[in-house]
Image 1 (cartoon, rainbow, N blue to C red):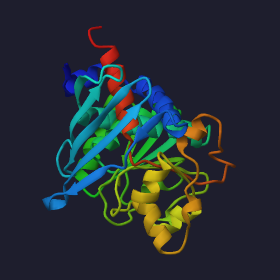
Image 2: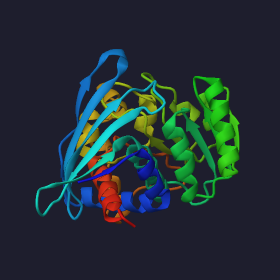
Image 3: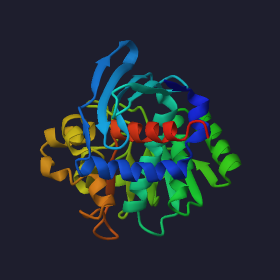
Image 4: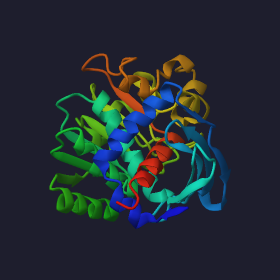
Length: 310
């Protein structure tokens, strides 16, 4: 059995490759070539949690991700992916889940951005200052010609540090905004990567034509955007069953009577496959709701295992 740590995952899983893996994994999910259960979550003290995500992906294998979510830690997601061989049933690999999650979440957003954002989008707003904020800064410019990044976070020192990291590492002009509203003003692409419990982004802040990757809340409860923005947007899930059960922003909007289940459109995988529409026109606000899916992890794990020893 092969064991891959965080450094080995980072060395072997580049973002361009992962974007392609995410497209294929989400098509597999949408077309019935995978099986998965809704994630199980155990709440821990201090707002922390432990999650279990089991599933199977045709051609990759089956297995589960065991992950702790400690939002205040430097690495908010820590755990392991256990991959089993689909032919023999034997455990094939144990892989660091924190690094895979960090990369694949942003790359799934980038794949969705490529399908849903306006073709000439070049301004990116990122709400949040943690690992996912950095990973989205790495991934999104691979699918659109980003020349400006605006950041907002609750901790200005962390936002300034991230701005320096983006400018220094990626060569993209980056500024820190005084508010979330100022960060997203006229931004063509917005990534919400916060641990907020209540909305930090409101419909009145968002211009027509904006694409939003809604990433920070991966469970029922915490919400990053207000219900009016949910109702206004074309709301496209990574996994429809999961979002109907655990997508916090959708659930709050539905409870308020602003939307019904029909508001959650076909999965992003069907958009990738050309089987359903994403953006209908240039004025649409589109939202990709990311809960995260075990098929994404299994696709990455299979790729890493195939390349081991190279």
